[in-house]
View (cartoon, one colour):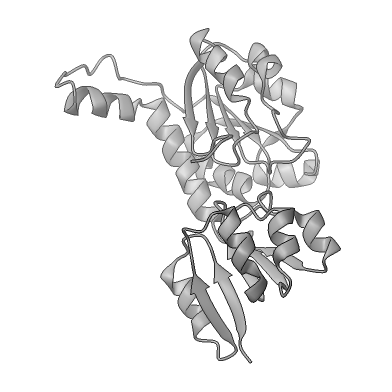
Length: 264
């Protein structure tokens, strides 16, 4: 008898094909189910495969009478109630290396676009039909200070990609040893110092109780005027209301956000 796997978020066709080629696995893809439909149907499945869109709540898990595993095609598991799954003996796994390079490259792309005001210049030229080269000159990255919050796989890859820009790189991560920081060529420091000295700050931490609202009004108050901030990690790590105020006050010159507290 084949194991029945439910996929509720868009995945690469290659990944789906890899599962379907296994003789003991049958895959069903339903990316349009809301929580009520998922609760009603999940009892038929042996495994659930999600990305970040599906919220695997305790209600879903309780209804999954045959569930043996929940897989997250990505880094974190913050959209899965791990405690509820553990209580039911359901294995929760993720794929931490799956998007490391993509997330790091995307971070660098956003940083560069923000530094050189590429989106604003494009909008001005294409939509407003205005030629304003001086207005969108942007800033040079060489010699600036980059602050990296989180030196895991993605944060470390961002450091590696940006090494050639000759920036001074500060990093804050309570789980990283000074020896590893030295090998990466970064200065390990506390969050307050990072906030005070950085020209660019990029977030690469998981969303936990400790990191919820990690960058808030207090932290923005420490930052130099003209700082630019990037978040390609998780929504909620930056207090978005505090960020809005910091932009209005002229503390933050630019913000590039790939994630938000409420999505989509």
